[in-house]
Length: 379
Image (cartoon, rainbow, N blue to C red; front, side, top):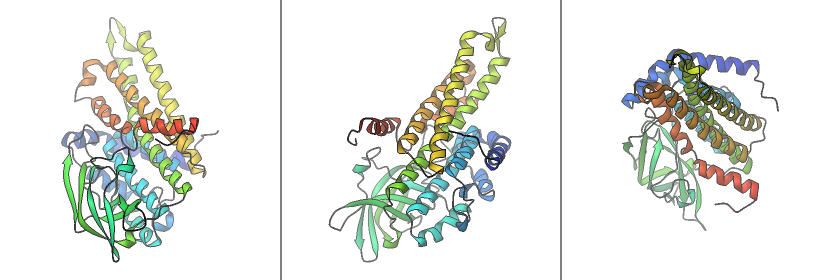
């Protein structure tokens, strides 16, 4: 399998890298320290078209691929994870609308998302339902040409700033209850934006609770279920992108460690001259390279029209765990200074830790992989 990037992809990656390293890198500590939404970065990203990277051109996007998005997210993740999460959510959730939305949904929202005027987010988790989506209780009861929505959502990333929510609900009132998605706009009567939950990482991308109390939503806002292929594409996209951001952050930690061990001296020689530490650097390089290849395989196959739930789950699992290992080893090489809040490694560690939880835990990914390998029932 050839992962050679096209000239256009090389240019896309180069431009993203330049923006990340010249602009986002030095701002990241501020957003994290103050738990502040990176609005300056968001406006800049909107101006440069990154929120519409994979949105079809007819809706104002760039019409790019999953591979294109993964390349960009890796570069932005190197500099500022909080900022990168907005590029992630705009593209991933716009893709969901493009796949499952009606013509009216696409016409109304996709160009607005591409321009950065509408920030979307996904609202699935509930107090009793995280990894187990079957425990979702938020209900949507038909009432004329509306649904009346009641329920609570929690841990909703970017929920405090989003303009549009893709909400997992249970549709009742028919022959049987059905799970599905409703598009609910900020400001809809009956929707309350709850308290912001202080989080360990991703601090510029606030998580909040959402409360629905007799929230009336037009029935036309219900999204289609979609076919198997569109579901696979959505899962592949989300998992590949999660993995790519984690990889970018880990690459930053690795780069910092490589530079440090070549400058720092102890016992009369550079840290880079101690065999044990050289092996640590080598192991970090192996993990990063393997993670990158797994992500590229899943992204390239999805781009070619052959998305694989298993390949994406493997990429996410390995990249999430490799990233945490690489950042942890980088901190170890730095010693006390790596544990300092003044060092970017401390922030990177907190940011990377969240990826193995978000978007389906690594344990859930292993269930998916094992189901494919063993042919066992779904857990």
